[in-house]
Image 1 (cartoon, one colour):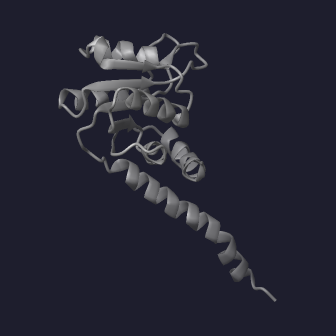
Image 2 (tube, rainbow, N blue to C red; image 1 turned 60 degrees about the vertical axis):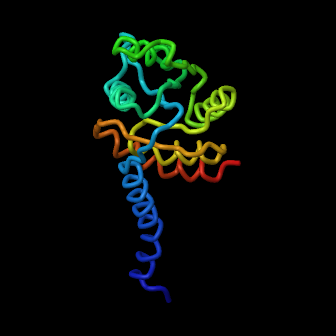
Image 3 (cartoon, rainbow, N blue to C red; image 1 turned 180 degrees about the vertical axis):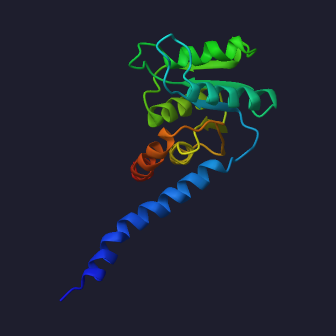
Length: 189
């Protein structure tokens, strides 16, 4: 007869696996992988109802500005779709960067970036069309491992990354969700 403590042990294994995966994902995302790249890819996020970047998106853009000014990349791809607020995330992102001193001719607008995979595919097309190779991706720490694996699986190398300096309580949920999303993207053909 199976004892209750054995059942509890068996039942706890999936939770332990998720906790380990979550820990690896968070530490991987928080460890910036710095290097000079041909282009940056800034992944989109929510735009406020007044058309301005949400705090999370603004943090991504501010990190991009910091790295751009330090010379890590000469060109920036802003990638996002049309959010439920009705704004083109990529255009809002591009406008924000221009308003903070980036020349419009250094920005490539990708308004087809409805998810990480779509953004990565468009980035691959952009860099191939312009004979570029390396990408520097900027997003939230929990999102970076999936973004990196997606770009690498498409054949982009090297891929550098840095996380936005922003945290909110929602990140706990987002990090947990990201474990499943990472596995799904890593297994994608």
